[in-house]
Image: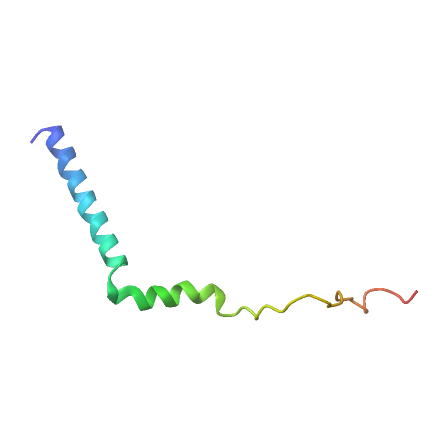
Length: 66
């Protein structure tokens, strides 16, 4: 086996591994689990509230009355 044959074999193994990972990631069985994982950062967010007409919050305890 020459160096070129070994390189070809390793390239083929890497390609088959890549195709296997892509197939696993896009399989229908994984869709629900990946959907849940994609929503994790958004689960504990508070709903957006419009700031139109709202007054800015003032920390009344940190400043003396003027």
